[in-house]
Image (tube, rainbow, N blue to C red; front, side, top):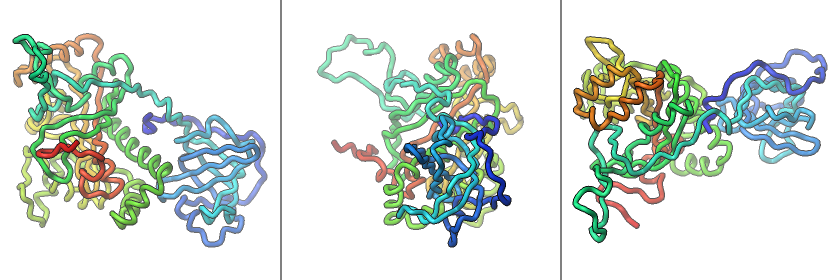
Length: 430
């Protein structure tokens, strides 16, 4: 499911047949190859990831993209090149002749003479196990108190005690359940509805929305976690662009002109990383007047997040190491007095602000015990504390709001326009 976890392997050739000797091939990006004006058989080399494979009796078609263009380059090869390793998501290096295409769908295509698989990737077997986490829960994962409580209808006769014997709510996150399951399956994820009783009618808030969440055992650094997050964003986006080009183009053409170029800019650049402390300093030095004055120890608001992305050249930016007081009890203490931060990370993207939120989890029993005691949560989360006593390992995870992701890639300004039946305060039609 997660292409971001594909493992790089040694260079492998898809054909053992010797290639004829030619003058060195010129290396081109996919964008440059597609823009070639005189495709008359010059030999080129293109590197990228396979976005689709179509095998016929005598010919093999690949679509390869390197992130430099929303369009992929068609590679045409002899059927003898066909291999199980030539699969969606695999990284390849293709050498051959750039020629005029006979198809009306593209101007040029690459006639392959040599194909090497740089990194094999089976997107269906990337090591993540899909967990269906419950919608009804007794836990408040975020600790913000913005919960919908679930109670039986008044028509149902229930004993004096609560139906479940404890108060229960619609889930705000499947994270805590994923942490349990990651102790057995190492890498797990869920994709389902989440609920927030947030009294907001802003353009980026919903009372019901979908989240992709992942939890990974034996993860020891934010750098490793951010690599998965960036890979998920880029791989998912390239998959959407490959499989739904007409739908994306419709939005870019009529709703968000210029979004195509902005999206290409995001895909071809490495995401940036700044600390929360650096972010606050950038905001303090800004000439822009903010509604909420930026200061260390205060949360970042949407206006701050959007400014930071602009300041970073409209490239997605990770903000890491937030003050401990701003974050939930489960985030790992950085032990960096006097600032006292936790190993938290938010990914900010153009036009939206925060898209991902994640952290390393506090796996050390005594640290977690103290945090729970200070918050008065020891009894409610004793089961969570017990996980740290039996084979606990360093681990971390993240969540990505799906509707905000659609806003980001399509250029839709209002989150209510990317979901068929938006639920928000004072509105629940149908």
